[in-house]
Length: 542
Ligand code: ADP
Image (cartoon, rainbow, N blue to C red; front, side, top):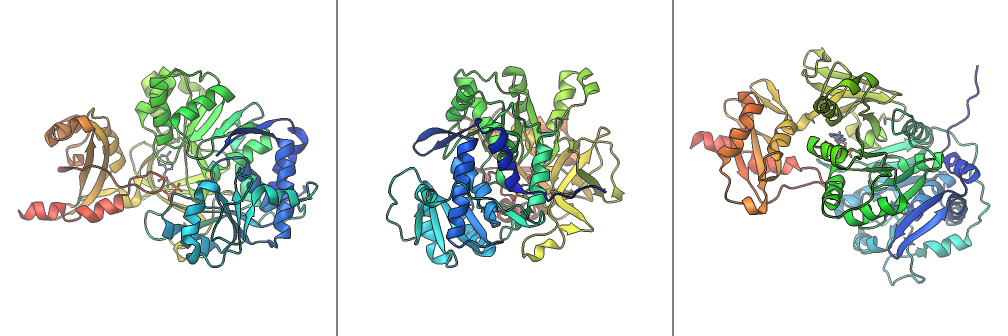
């Protein structure tokens, strides 16, 4: 038999303090860029833990953060588990009602707030009566006037803390350490609770050579917010493995990201497609040295093939497409070409890179279609089911657990195909799939094709009730400003015809000024479906 040493989140920071004390975290805050060694981060974190203890934070209590990516947020990532409390990172881009809902649902006792986010929290004051104290993460010497009371100054609180505070060593690895809520597309957000065990195992997987391969030699820049699935777990992994971290701070621009890449010699950066689109534009307009980058990792929604191609071919930046969810910590699937695939031509390689990839070691998947498990032929569609030690098995105090977590599997709600190499391609979300005359049509494939039309700025394809076919695809299209009013619908339809089976082609196109989006920039198809639900019914009658 073997030892059973409990996994512990704070052990990752201890490792950095012992072995990587001199390595740095570059942090951009409201007042500029500062650098801290892991020795300093460790000491400040211990001070913070001891101060939280003195404020009365108890084991298992939730402590919320409303903050950007910077060193103070990183300290909170470890200091809150350091008193056996639960770090609840709150997505500041949710609606104020949803933010209040999740603060109350998680029963947050204390909130850490960034200076520029303070007004948002002040506006919620009367709706979050259970919060006992607020801690302002600020560079200013003095606290501003605020109706939020008691309000503590982060740095002054640290001064009262003990730099030699010892993190509890005998924790239960199944105790909760973190919480995130999924950005809701329907109903209230749903909470997911991470444990010591799930967090450490997920971090370890980020270090796998054939996974994220996060290592000491990396300069890692998480652009994905620390309030969005814990910046995909990268702050934990980077600390543990002793990577230098570059935290881009509040309200950054593509120009700032490009400057940080050049200045700090970033090797690995993570973000959603819109971030990389913005960076590409900046790289097209101005010249930067990006030669340090060994990979950018992109997930959250599908990365367009054209973007991957430009990154790799024009800028020589390797691109890694990855898939995950709040429920999955999040990294579970990523593209890594196999050695024998290097013989493929560039276009075929690109096709694989544009897929989401295959599961990382430690994750198992099943894909269930209308007739059970689908064939790995790249065509048959089914729902993606996953299980792993870093996947949730329930939502926090929520009756929506049933239906998503069944028989030991997470039912992702994503419809996929799998090819003979095991590469998964996300075809759609179950609720967005268009079911026309008993067949399935992928809204994502149609959108990507329409967005390749030169005059189109963005496009969203939705299912709309149809008197004969149950549902038909309807394309909602935003044209580029210079093309508005000048492109006939037929041109777009003709453009699609050679690319799809006849019955996939949308019967109609609706031009609009803007497509409604969720807080994390995904198309809000529910709103479109509500607005346009009578479209074919009325056109059929008239
Ligand atoms: P939410 O579910 O609230 O949008 P998440 O950030 O947890 O928030 O999003 C998870 C979903 O995002 C997945 O179920 C999937 O539909 C989509 N997604 C994530 N990564 C990718 C990707 N690389 N390609 C396509 N879709 C993705």
